[in-house]
Length: 144
Image 1 (tube, rainbow, N blue to C red):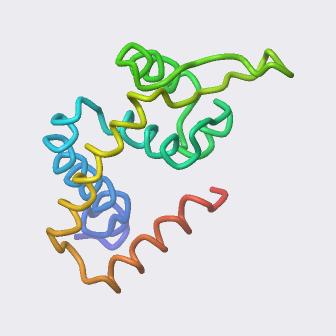
Image 2: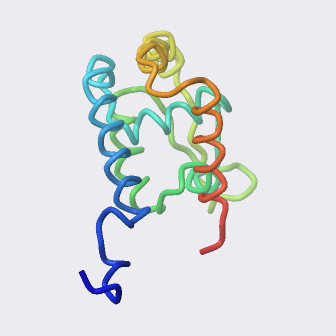
């Protein structure tokens, strides 16, 4: 092959294995999340809420690296399931506040098996996992 096109080889891409691994991981999550009636995006949203109990929509967008319009429909579905409440900040009505309901708090007990199941699969050593996660967060925080 002509060296001029070396950069176009799939094997030379960083984006492809990143994409493929993300898809593989999400497919592994799917049956586990189905048992607790959540999509992956709903699951990571609930993780933020289980940690904070209540969060401003803008902060949730930042934490999840999502766009607000992606979040809106998903939050509506979580509200319909009874896991969250959506309201306005009393001091600034422009700010949307998302908070856990009792049912949303109870879901946390069911969800604990999800990370435990995946951790037990030993995809990487503990050290490799720490390095991988550290590199991913470094890329997420990068301004590019």
